Each structure stands twice: as C-alpha cells, then as structure tokens.
Image 1 (cartoon, rainbow, N blue to C red):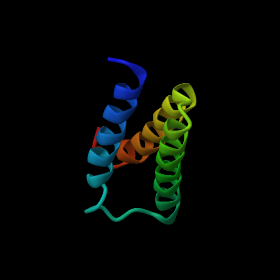
Image 2: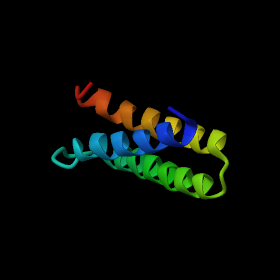
Image 3: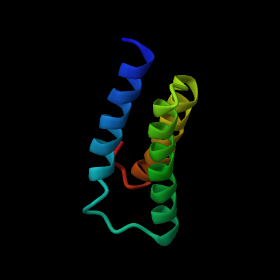
Image 4: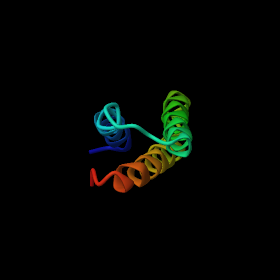
Length: 77
C-alpha cells in the first residue's frame, strides 16, 4: 500500500468512526475536539492535493488521535 492509499483508507475510517458519535450527547469541549479533528481531515485533503503525503498523513493521524480521545471517554474503544 502506498502513502496515498493509506491516507485514503484512513479518511474512510475517520468517517466511519465519527458517525459513532452522532447519537451521543457531547459536551461543548468534546464538540470542540471533534471540530478540530474535522479540520485536520480538511488539512489532509489540502496536502494530498499538493502531493505532500507526509504532511497529509500526519494530519489524518492527528485527527484520529483527537477523535479517539472523545471515543474513549464514551467507551466506544
């Protein structure tokens, strides 16, 4: 799997994981964290378009970390 394929796979996984939170009441702080994670996925797409796959991978990895923190507090992982 090359870098771009991995990034695309991670973007799909992010969307799957974020859907888990749709039915959960999040605190204001958690909403802020989820919004930040979404912003990092937008950054991921931006860097993919610029063919900067290393930075794109860093962005999606960080987005997953933020999202996982919220998912963990709600015992989803």
